Amino acid sequence: MNCRYDDIAKMIDHSLLNPALTADMLDEGIQVALDYNVASVCILPYAMRHCADRLAGSTVKASTTIGFPHGGHTTAVKLAEARQAMADGCEELDMVVNVSQVLSSAWHYVGTEIRTIVDAAHAQGRKVKVIFENCYLNDEQKIRLCRICGEVGADWVKTSTGYGSGGATTEDLKLMRRHAPIHVQVKAAGGVRDLDRLLEVRALGVSRVGASRTKDILDECRRRLAL
Image (cartoon, rainbow, N blue to C red; front, side, top):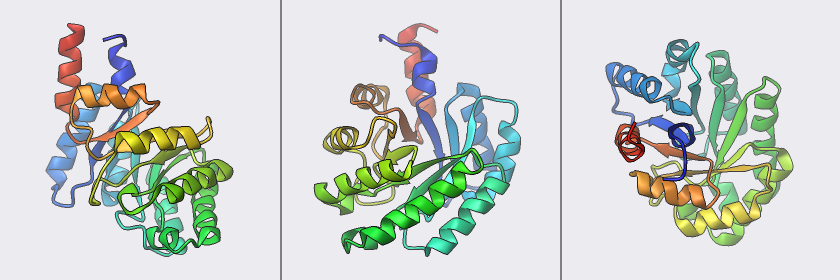
């Protein structure tokens, strides 16, 4: 493996978004993220303040979701969610686009909403990942979203929530990296379940992945690097 452990660990947003996770399970997940020194914990919104407190002083960032998982919230609700998350210590926000409006070609609505959340986050020094939910979109729609995200200054474009009918495909990741401006990073979510797949998407230009099998992935990384 031609990389360091930190190169891999700092690609992972440890996902704690299953609605059936108890408070104790969330705490255990936060500890996994700290033990393995990942990029961030992406946690259920109600647990954000507790998560941020637990991560304080570490290099693991606190993140949560906005408009999750369907994206159909009003812009005002998404903005309120974003402001609450940031007040609770959120450093990175994963926002779902309004899929219905994308499919309806309501591009002004879509762009205005993304810009609203990005501007609010950037005003407080926070970052935004824009979730497309690619399983419902055609390539033209994905390309248009990449361009909009570049225009409004989003920090990442992201394939999926992990709760739709499909996750991150190689074809979609190639398309998103090709059509998103170079200053916009790409995040893969849904289907990155082992180290080999993580290395595959990394080679495509992906800088972050959403993963719930973080421990398995990074234990294998340590084994291959003989750490």
